[in-house]
Length: 104
Image (cartoon, rainbow, N blue to C red; front, side):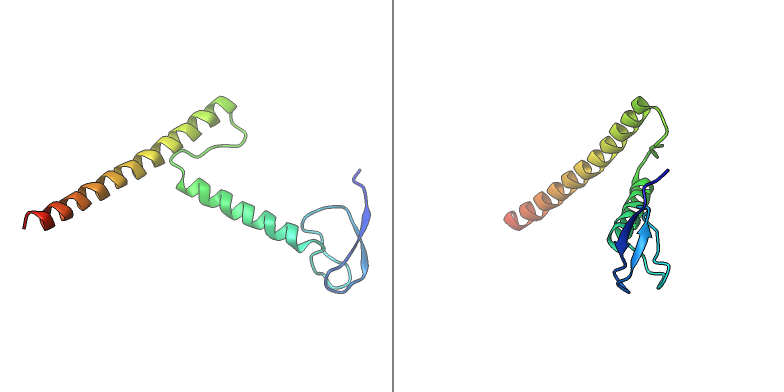
């Protein structure tokens, strides 16, 4: 059984019973009782979805911890290789430009 406490509604100012759920609303004005926590939870879901989309291997939260660590390592290795090659191409392009200016 969850504990019930009271919280003051940020919109109408009336006291309401609150069980601590994130999406709980005021019975009078139907506004969220803790909008900051709700916004934080929604942003966390968006960030998690974005991370899942950009990952090479999708990490299942209910999977084996060893498999999760392996997938995180492979994802890290992929992004490190991508950025490393990008830096090498940038350095090569910069060297071509500098040598072209020097030996004109």
